[in-house]
Image (cartoon, rainbow, N blue to C red):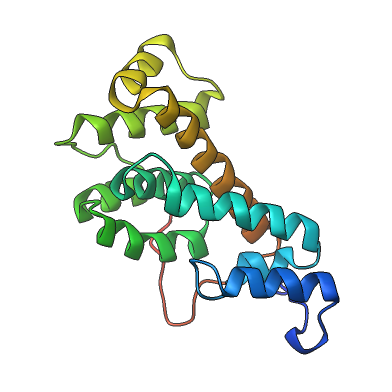
Amino acid sequence: MAGERYTEPDPANLSEAQARVFEAIKSGPRGSVAAPFRLLLHSPELADRVQHLGAFVRYDSSLPKRLSELAILITARKWNSPFEWHHHVRDGLAGGVPAAEIEAISERRRPDFDDPKAEAVYDFCTELHTDLAVSEPTFERARMSLGEVGIVDLIGIIGHYSLVAMLLNTFEVPEPEGTKIPLSD
């Protein structure tokens, strides 16, 4: 991606609403204001709402880190979002997603799972992204593995990170400098 569309508000010239959201993001669990949120500052009210949803689905959902990061990686790969992929490979590994699963997702292959909950998350995310719905057998496996709260939180993760990927892709946010993201088809 060329990156010519990627513009951020100047931190020195933020409006009162932009500055309020900027500080809320910076002082929250993220500790910084990354590219997606800098873009969202063009619409400070949306930025504030998205950052609250993002903080919940990333840090406070009912899903353990391993499963939430798996869902984020599946979504980043679905949308071919290099920026999102780069940041969540690191977080996924730290959260317990095996490197072999990450490599398979990168190559659009089904991973070999040793965890039935991870397999249920993979099937649910993949089916929802591909078919725009989830079959009864996939739903029931997810319900047995995650419960209904887990399914709702999983959909929240997928939705939030799809929004972020669309934003990053539309504004052609470049890959982090010095990285080569293996997202080819």
